[in-house]
Image 1 (spheres, rainbow, N blue to C red):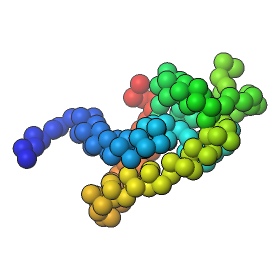
Image 2 (cartoon, one colour):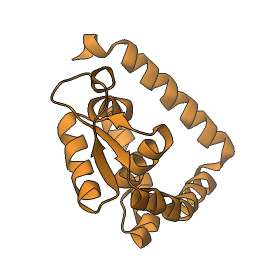
Image 3 (cartoon, rainbow, N blue to C red):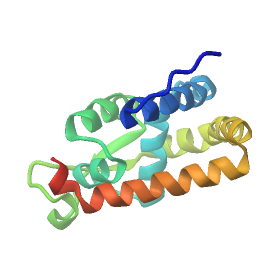
Length: 152
């Protein structure tokens, strides 16, 4: 296969994330979820009630992307809005979310298919590449968070 060397970090990372996204979406299709939707269910399930703005920040999403991703999950009854103390919201216009009982079931039901996708990716990458990639990405994320105001 012909591979062109790319100097653009964004293009290279997007190529990789599209390939990974396709694998996750393929396995999660049986649960009628995308990886973005599964990630929200898992994050909310893991942390409990959380403000939408802190959740968006935590997931590296902007508010509009978060709203678009939440909307069908709220519509399906898997995520519900809740009142939270203002210090958990960071903004008076924000609101809190949590998994409904049905959302908790959906998250747990879809975990095996997420695991299958993760196992496929781990097999493709191998342990050494997978761990190195995760370490590099974590390190890069920290650096971007430390320089967030300087880059925007």
